[in-house]
Length: 62
Image (cartoon, rainbow, N blue to C red; front, side):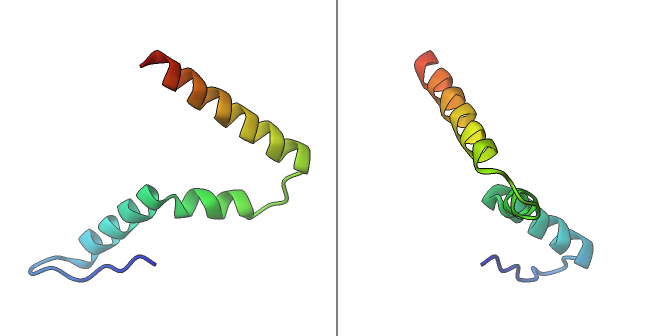
C-alpha cells in the first residue's frame, strides 16, 4: 500500500504528483487497466510469450 505523507511546505498538487509517480513505479495503474476487462486465456498466453521473448532478447544483448 502506498502512503504519501505531506512534506514541509508541500502543496496538495505536489503530493498528488508524487503519489501518481509512486503508483507508476509500482505498476498499480497498469494492473488495474489490465484487470478492468476480460482477457481471454489465449490472449494472456500470447502476452506472456511476448514478454518472455522481449526479456530474452534484452538479456541476450548484455
